[in-house]
Length: 74
Image 1 (spheres, rainbow, N blue to C red):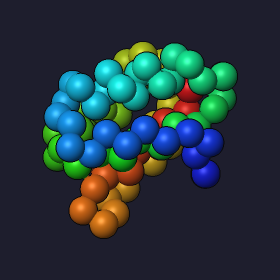
Image 2 (cartoon, rainbow, N blue to C red):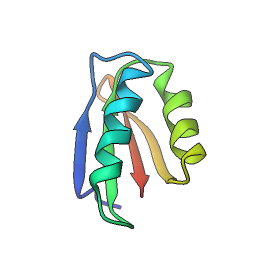
Image 3 (cartoon, helix red, strand yellow):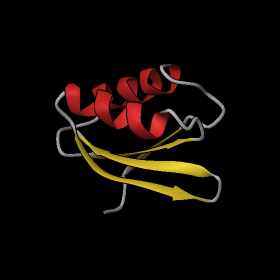
Image 4 (tube, rainbow, N blue to C red):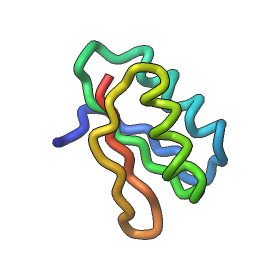
């Protein structure tokens, strides 16, 4: 799935990167897909868990080029 929106949170640690993603998700229409780019290793586990706890659907968690790409559907 292709994301319609991107949050580049590389260089930010958890939970700051989740706060940025959450703010972006709140502004998106229902069923929109958000791509979140992170490089904090904890985010690979923690960010998807936080998104799902808020009722969002995590579509993918992928490692690519030294960072982690997380796709979340609102």
